[in-house]
Every structure is written in structure tokens, then in C-alpha cells.
Length: 184
Length: 239
Ligand code: SF4
Ligand code: SF4
Ligand code: FES
Image (cartoon, rainbow over all chains, first blue to last red):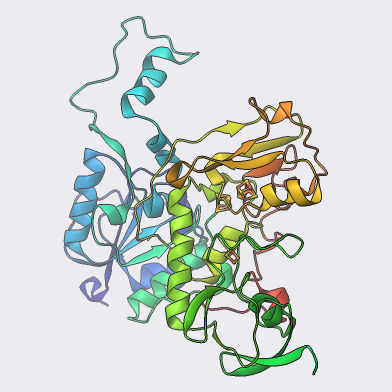
């Protein structure tokens, strides 16, 4: 079978912990079936850093906590027909968004200057141009681009991701049983 | 003349008795009307509006509205469902609800309402208010990040425990639950066995050292939607 006929799937981890990707790998033996029906484009799974072409489905883990996250997310929107927020961080910011109740400067000062275990005699907050600039707060994915589906969970179970992916790839509506939609 | 009469809920005739609210009459007939601030052992408060139905063409809170003869009630109605979903969403975005690490997760009524109504993401932006945690008491903690202002603790402490430990202070977006002491919870006479501690529907008032006792899969709403015990169904629900 020529590989070009397979629909492409891309994935990324923005301000996430890779837990959602781990859950995707947790589909166990079904990963062979997945490899049969899709081709992976840009993804940490194959380490492709740029898009090779247009994709049917993009899976987004994590929200946007820095400039680079925003660029990557916009790139995904451009290259994917269907964009799915996978997990609580993409959906509402998740653990990284705990900083949203606190002013950014206060956060950085606590982390690099005033924290009880901080040793930083130079008193400098990391500012290397290589480090992506932090946003004032953590934004969920659908505050930045249009998101077509949301799969809650921390992480969503492998079954949740699998059911949704199979439905999307076969142009069926995503309809998940009660057990598979959880916020934790 | 008896005190019993008929009302109609979503096309079904059910019996109600004088003095019953719409919610109570429906519940007695096996019809679940979603609710949050309502608690069967406490006086109705009518503040969360989740139990809104349309009765004789007008929206009202079914936990406070008395049933009347020949009343026509819409409960499973697209408009009503839409209101409820919006209200649930607003409760989520008004506080700081990080379900992944919340001790109440799996047994939380707000979360369970989200599940039942198929809520996967909020359309409204999260407000991320800055709120306090009071962990001064040896046995009980209060995390205001998760408080939905249902007033159950206020009513239970006043009417059941006879203590008035909790009360509302401020107004509008500043409204919050405070303790009856100019300091913190440790300075009150609250006890772990108080009704006020047990009735919180969310993870705002929690007993200490009991977090995560039930494993994932064995918690109240892991497999069965909220309301199933009223409906007597098998809990299968597509969301
Ligand atoms: S109180 Fe309920 S909704 Fe809020 S974080 Fe805890 S489990 Fe989630
Ligand atoms: S602390 Fe709990 S019971 Fe009291 S008002 Fe808040 S949510 Fe309701
Ligand atoms: S349950 Fe009726 S208003 Fe809250």
C-alpha cells in the first residue's frame, strides 16, 4: 500500500508534561493498527520538527505558556483539518495555569530570587534570547486558535484517545461513553 | 379533597402533594432534576439556579417553587439544558477548579454535573481569581478556590449544628464564605463531625488526611452519572 494514501496525524506537546503522549502510547498493541491506518507527520513520536504536508488530525497536548507554544499551535492549525485539544492543560491550562492567579513578575521573583531554596548570587532572572518569552499567563488552546474537539482527562485514557481518533479518521462523530469523559 | 394532585413533567403525569416543591415531587416519581445548592436535609436556598425548569411557561428554580395542581413542567428541554450547561460552565470559570489533583475528584457534585451535561471545555474564559486556603484547623481545611457559594455549609452550621461557623461576606464577585471568627477556622468551634463539614458538594471544605482514599474507578461518579440513584437507571449515558 503506498503510504501517501494514509491520512496523516500530527501531535505536539506545548505547556504539558508529555503525559498525554504517554497515554497515546498506552493504546498498547493497537499502536500496530494505528501504524496501519495513519502516517505520523510532525510529532515527538518520530521527532519530525516541521510539517511534511497537510494532516487530517492534529493532537494538541498542553496550553500556551510562552511565545513558541503560540507559534507551534498556529502552525498546527494551518496544517491540520481537525484540531483536538487532548487533556486538561490544552483544555483549561491545567497545572501550569496555577500561575494565572499570580502576577508573572511575582512568580519569576519567587522562582529565581526570593524562594527559600534559591541560590542565585547574580540576582538575574534567566533572560537568554534562546529561551522563549513567557506569556503573561497560560492560555488554553481554544483561546489561541479554533479547536474542533476536546478530550478531557489528566491524561485522557488510552481508550478515550483511541476511540476519538478512530472516529475522526473514519469521518464519524466523536461520541464517547460516560466512563471515557473525565476531568482527572 | 385530598392534598394530592397531578402535575405533568415532560409529558408524564405524576402525583404531587401539597407542600412539595417541583423538585421533590419529581424526585419522588423517579425524575431527576439536576441541582447543586439543594440538599435534602437543609432548607432550600435557591441560589445556584441549576435546578431551573420551565413551569407553566415561566422559568423558576424547582428546589424552591411549590408544585401546584395541573402544573406543566419542562425539565429535559433543550432550552433548560442549555441554561444549565451555561451555569455549570460559569461555576467552573469563576473559581479555580484543577480537578486532576483535587481530593474531591470523582465524588464532586459540580464535576459530576459537568459529566452529566457533556461539558468537555468551557466557552467562557477562566477568571483565575486569587483565593485563600485555610488549613489552620487540625482536622478540616477550607480551599476557597473551589467554593461555589452554594451556602450548604452556612445553612448546615446554623440550622443543624447550631453553631453559625460559616457565613457569607461581601457581595457580587467579592462574595465569599467566611468563618465566624476574625481569624481562621482553628479559632472556631467547628468539629469534624459537624453537618457543615460533610455537606460541601465540592472540594472546598475537606476533612484532612482522607484525600484520595477511594482509588480511581471506585469513586461515586466514576461509572454512574449523578442522578442515577433517583432515576434508578443503569447509568449508561452518551455524552
Ligand atoms: S471541587 Fe470538583 S470541580 Fe472543583 S477541582 Fe475539585 S473535583 Fe474539580
Ligand atoms: S464551602 Fe462548600 S458548602 Fe460552603 S458555600 Fe462553598 S461550596 Fe458551598
Ligand atoms: S438547586 Fe435549586 S437553585 Fe440550587
